[in-house]
Length: 494
Ligand code: ARG
Image (cartoon, rainbow, N blue to C red; front, side, top):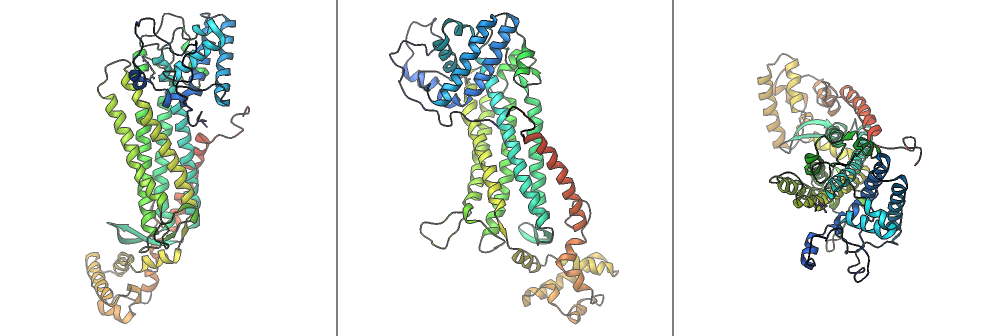
């Protein structure tokens, strides 16, 4: 899993001022100091410092490759690599302060390398540009956040399947137009979300395959004259291989857009689910009881226990959509190749990743601890004429044409509404007054259990169909678990 480091960049403004050490990477062509407002506007260190481990990993691969192809001597490469490890260590321990003297994470690393190991440090940037460097860093960072998203979805699917297994006989109304329609089970209802999150996991997995190419070596835009071994660096960094076109390599943010879209769909699914949790938790439904640890109170109304987690997830969905729209808009007018506009990819993308991943984690915790009031759910299905279709089907079984049966049951429903009772509360005599085809076994046919369990077409809520569905879900989950969840066995060094 990607470790965010440092979690909050410690910006100590001006701490390096007046000291004779290197902080800026360019300047030779300039005869004036940068206006301080320009520097503040241009700098990205405050938000791209989270790319530090990725920037150092990329630099290590680049230095090793330069040593391997002979652009650097092996001693030079070794010295650089050692210096880079030192920078990572010292930043992690806090010994090396991150100050706003540096323009961005790339400058921070390179300047500190030079300050640390001297002249040799100035050779690291041979055959490289910050354009392919930032393209690489973002890809590495995004790849590990995608993996994190994948594993968080797996956790959620795990909880869903566990609940499904527990609730195959928990009857509840299924709704259309938010009106009670036909009875289903809680297992079936939750199974719908299992499908959605399964597709979400699949989308992340697909996108990870597409994005896993290494832009390092593309240079500023046109490659380089040095004999770089791009396949070597790609392999070192866990990519399938190098990207194919250097101009595309430094200009492409499709993979980020794809991930932000995937996160948007995940948020949309979480938001719909949240909406149901909020409804089910209301005094009117009372289907569920949220755990005290996953709900909050009111400062004025002592009786309140609010579904704030679900509401926040629903609310935060807009942010993630916004982050996707912002990046789509940033990219839409950019000529090839790199443009500084692309620095604007970061804050929004980081916000979307942080937001969606946190929402996934919190939602799973909330779901895991919900108490489902089975009796209330079943009673609700019973009181909503959700078995009316089954009553009509019963008559069809006795030779009544469906349209006639529909009319008969409709009239019975009107009668029941006026008496505030359910269909099965009518006596057989009363039923027979509507149709002579009713018999004692109608009561059996109207039971929630029968109404549900007889629906066994593929994908339906009946017990046999649900068995099949859950067996399939089990396999799907195992696949994603293997793809996204790492165990010690996968990596013996960990
Ligand atoms: N901070 C920059 C970014 O995020 C790094 C690349 C700078 N490249 C350049 N040509 N100025 O895009």
